[in-house]
Length: 349
Ligand SMILES: [Fe+2]
Ligand SMILES: [Fe+2]
Image (cartoon, rainbow, N blue to C red; front, side, top):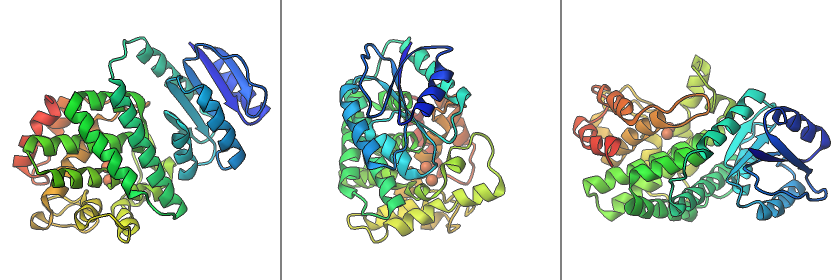
């Protein structure tokens, strides 16, 4: 599988090449240097500091000529959300954060090689819609990280496109497309959005409520923009301190959005309460059944299911049946008739 490497220093270029050359055919170029002939590249690996305007502008130009490369992996040294958001905004399909991790990078590329061996099955429209959704999410997360204005209209447009896409191709195609092409928190938010929309459509909820559902789903984890990626993307168990930090995200999301124009009271409520359970054991407010509204209940079910079926480099996605069985086992926490109604979404649609 031919791979093209781009870096902003000779040392970085040599470091990445040394890892990849043992297994792949590698071409490379220095950012801002003389372009090289690159044909039939299967994946692009970029290692550059995305905090400098110069790097960003040069990468933008470069991506114009490499837009057809389906997999674009960015290696980011600093753990700032801003750099990760910037990578996605430039067109990254995968972002690996922290010091160069050989095993992780090779696992990503092997994963690409094995998926390339299968015939592509995702409709182009679904891929474009998912990319637009990811760019909207990246811009929302970077706005929170920078303290700038959140673009509510882009999120709304992305949600509306996802609703159209699910209507046209069905939920399963959406889930497959997102899991094939997207990573981490953005993959999660795109999955939750698709599931929540399909849940709403299957129950025949009015158009206004579908819009509330997809807005709530797009924004529900925005509070995670304040949590370090090392904690968010940690494989394996979190310690008590890390868990406590993660549990700040619904209230942080609420605080971020509460003065944002265009965010309705229902969406705000869903962002704050999507981890509440009917039996009062959830967070941040320990609400009980009567205080948890329908949209929030639907979002919570979609959220848990999405987290279970996500694809991560370090873990196999759970099957839809196994994930649904877990929902069914959450006695007293989720509304039974809603979980029953979700069966069709979870297993069939
Ligand atoms: Fe959450
Ligand atoms: Fe979530």
